Every structure is written in C-alpha cells, then in structure tokens.
Length: 181
Image (tube, rainbow, N blue to C red; front, side, top):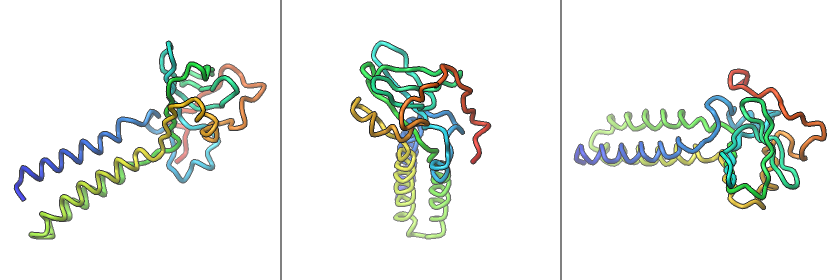
C-alpha cells in the first residue's frame, strides 16, 4: 500500500473520531464514568434549544407538566416551557473515549511487527478503532427532538418524579472538581 493511502486512512479516522468529540455538551470532568451513573445523586447534563431564547445548559433537574428545570452553572434554577423547546441533548455519563483512542493508536502502531501483513492490518486497526471510538463517544447522548420524548428521559433528571414543592430558585451547582471518579 502506498504511503499516501496510509495518510488518507489516518486523516479519515481522525476526522471520524473528532466528529464524536464535538457533540457532548457537558463540561469536561462534570460527568462520571458509566459505572458511577447509578450511584450518582445528580442529574444528567442537558442542553436545551428553545424558540426565541438562548440555549440553556446545566444539570437536568426535573420535568413537570409544562416545563423542564435546569440548574445552570451559576446556581440559578431555570424553567423552560416545554411548548418552546425545539430540541434537547442529554449527556448522562462520560464515555472516556480517549482511552479507546489510545488503544486504537497503540494497536495501529503494533502492526509494524506484522511485516507485509501491515498493508491489511493497519487500515483495519485505524478504521475499526476510529469507528468504535466515535460510536462510544455518542453512546451516553440522547437527543430529544419531539416534546413527547421528554417524559421518557425524566429518569436522567435529579428529581425523576417531578419538581419538589420546595425547590429553591437557586442551588449550589455541582462543580467538576468535587465530583469523585
């Protein structure tokens, strides 16, 4: 296989892997790994796009009859009318896709020891590893495009049963540095 073909494969794989990198709305370090999600008392991270307003992001607190509630990073609790929501993206754990990317790189480099077989095994490692990395990065994301889907995702809220009657309008936000991995 010609050297320029290898570079094309590597560029394609990097583009594919970077596609997965650009879509998780949660701040780095805010979400824990998949193993910790069931023991985590906080809600998932949500990014809400609504008609006529700026995007709102933060901890997904609750879904009510006509609104969803988001705890923003400044500690303010924001209610967004469901009727105004265009779409929402929910991230409920950190996919830790960087680990898969490292294994893909190491596996690709290990094909040097395959001699002539490298022309077959190198592209398999690069393409297969990149596809797996991009897929894993998308795994913890749910995209809500229809308002009817909001009831189905309430399990990812801090208060899946609905808004507590005494929910204050400001709460201390969860900070990435206080999250135990």
